[in-house]
Image (tube, helix red, strand yellow):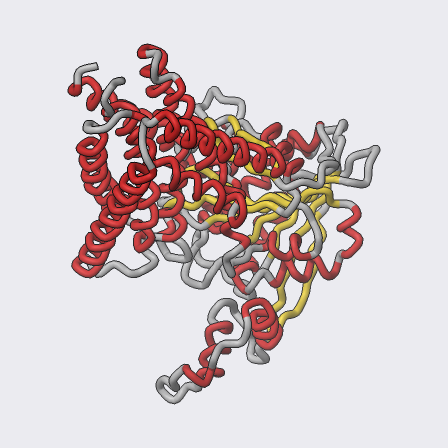
Length: 562
């Protein structure tokens, strides 16, 4: 095939794969007036506007107004709400924080304006809520139960209705609260419930999830009644709703999500990453108590997190509808299909389309990794025996790949450092335009480097330097980070399929287009989520990962035909 057409196909495959991967993160469009969900959406937005007039931290008069609004909505549904009150002191919060994260090293923290490190630590806690003069605050959880007639087991949906003192909290977390109200409204007259439905509105989440902690401790009997906890949260105010955390042995829970939701978005590596981080939500309290659970959040737009800009006006309407759709569908599915956790297995999963999760058991994923490793070792050994390349070819190719990755990382790091200093951006900054610009610039440079090398080599020689590194990544991820091993094992198997079809020209080109697009598609969400979750300073990590599919696609199309 002429070189110009090959290069053109490289661009087409890269753009198609990136476009399909990016499409996963587009939230569903808000319903039109003719849509069945429009009345619920309209009522949800009305309630959201009414409950985000001002910040309403725990203990404030503003939170009392929000609570009164919620209770009035529940009363209008002819439902009974139970309000659990618990008094929490600053010392309680401090002790809980030290228990979870360890005590600060006060000896190495300077005294500022005459305030000791210990007092500064206490003042930080005081600033999160409206404590009274005795350093006490009363937290009030609201619980509503829809009772299924023939069972005493069910699902609990949870969201918090308190905010930080500086934000009205439209995304974090009032959109979750009002979405749950509509799920409750939809199911309140259902005489054929197959599961009990619990709706819990917690207080004190911004105070270290003290409301959820109190609920778990005060109601130990609930653990025998709740089969699954579904928590709705937010870290940003736009983009699709991510299921970002699960309990352990989550195979059945993820399958349940697949059955319930028309627009699931989730990746198993997210949950594994979150479990390695010190962060926590209300669901953390339930998981520590042994509950099974799923945690959802909008992650894009983190620049508005805990800020005044997390307002009703700034909340993306598609994101708002995704919250509603998720709450409605999970509640509706639970009303018909009880959750049963029979297979105590971990799972590996990723979104294959906006409406479908690819799910496999942990055992299956290990088998996939093993097949990939054995197949590639067999192929490399076969090529060496045939004389298609030598060990030095592998070493040279791997060195070139690592060199391109290192160069890409250094270039992106330099751009990030320079831009953040010039624009006075902080470490916790998300700027999509900067990220896309860096990815584009470094991607073009990596692509040029890949094309220059690949055009001088056969497909076998070009892959000789790529596959060994992927082989190490498969083994390493299977041992240390199994939840993302699919990324490398599927890449290995895909490229191996192409090389086995090398002697059949048309079959090779078709396979190269399909598999190349698929590989880029798999890597796109990973790179995007690294940036979204870890902010602009982690762009070099996303860039390093993006080099792999770029060089693979170059090898598939630009190498010499044999």
